[in-house]
Length: 62
Image: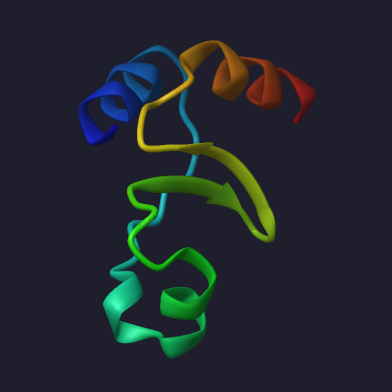
């Protein structure tokens, strides 16, 4: 997922924060082993595999 996000960021700038969920018990409870996950706040965008078309669509909304 990280490589795909890097490709997207090369085409369009956006902020990206990488979080180690193991450092936050709330995130461990929420995601468990369902990682990697891409989220925007409480909204989960994709899990395991990057959905580039969905991310691009969401970026067009902002």
